[in-house]
Image 1 (cartoon, rainbow, N blue to C red):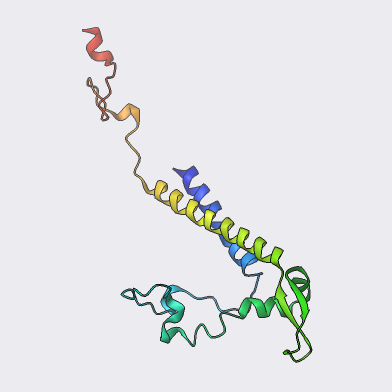
Image 2 (cartoon, rainbow, N blue to C red):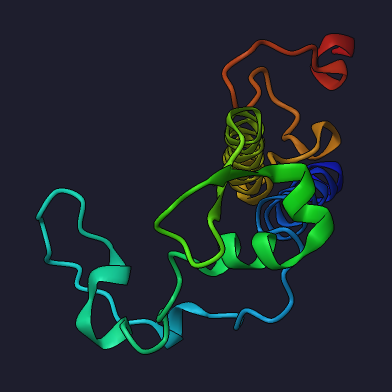
Length: 159
C-alpha cells in the first residue's frame, strides 16, 4: 500500500507542476483560491453554467478570462514563444497579439497531460484506501481460506 500512496503522491505532484508551471505559465501574482473562497450553486442545471458565472464570485474572479493572456503578452520571452504580432488598424499601436496555432495545439496537449495525471491520481487514491486482506499466516487452520479456496492443513494431514 505504501507504494500506491507514493505513486499517488508523485502523480499529484506532477499534475500540480503541469498546472502551475506549464498551463499557468508560472504566474505568481494571481491569487490562490480555495473552494471556501468561492460560491457554488449545486442546484443550477443550465448547460454551460459553472461557478465563475455565480454573481458573488464576480469580484474574486474579476479579469480571470484575460489574466493568462495578459501575463504572456507582458512577458517578452513568453510572448515570443506563444504569440504572434499581426497588423490591426483597430488597436492603438497598429498591431495586436494572437495565439500561434502551434501554441494552441501544445497547450491542449498540456491540458490532456494534466487531466490524465488527475485521473490517474484519483484511481491511485481509491486503491490506497482499500483495506488489505489478512496475511496468509493469520488465516485459520481449516480446510478453506476466506476466499473459499482449498488449502492444505498440515495439522489434519498428520492424523
